[in-house]
Length: 112
Image (cartoon, rainbow, N blue to C red):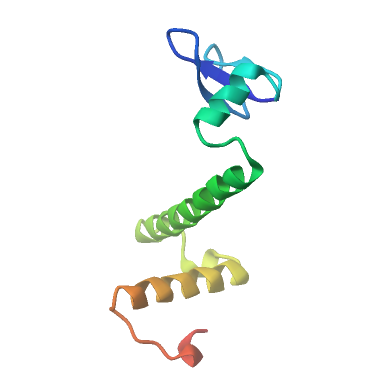
């Protein structure tokens, strides 16, 4: 069930899949105020919801890249600590990012 938060006037101002103690209330997925909030946010169709999730996925990938960089920079993990498949994906992304920045020219055979 979804949980909604309300503004001072009692209007739905946010939605989540988890409760925030004292800040949200559980409503049915077809609750009229929830439906109206989703329409107002442009999330009323499956296509728009998929697009929102796809955009969020791209942002999360970049966040994970940056988090891995930060952990390695601080010495909390090493590249070799990553599972092999994850390390390969991370390395390919790093090479692609550097190529886009114009900092690196790499032959495909040089990658792993």
